Image (tube, rainbow, N blue to C red; front, side, top):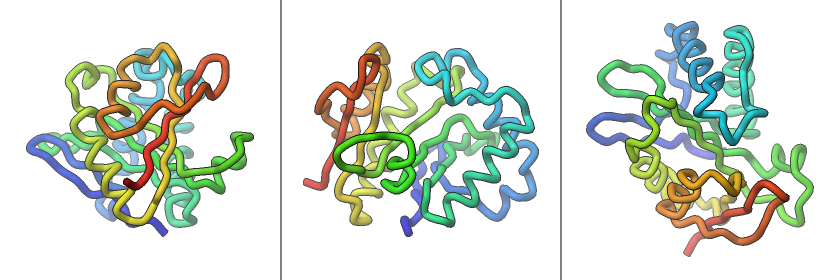
Length: 181
């Protein structure tokens, strides 16, 4: 099982679901719903849209179970001052990727989401590289990401985290990867 990512800077904290998050589950669901229903955030990821707060609650419950089952590892990016979630980083296991993709080999896949109010602030550019390093240092030798060809910001963030474009994934997306050096 992967150890949760834990990283912080002056303003933000990357963390998995913590015991104290149970006490604020409804607020957390609302914050996740805000991110995964935002048109700007989902411009290149429309399939990730949540339509209701109930969907967000079910999403969180599923993610919590999946984390401990080793299927995927959702991490939150929280504002240290307010405690609110402003983004998420999800690491998808090869087993779960196998259920959704048909490719030759199945690495861990990384996805990230950021609130529209936090985009353009270089937040993910600052936070994703140390998160990826923590994962690579745990023995995950290969992490991939699939990015819409028009999503210039996501491509820049991935490059800062040492990902390299390897090939087209499909007509709309490219395949990026980072490996242990």
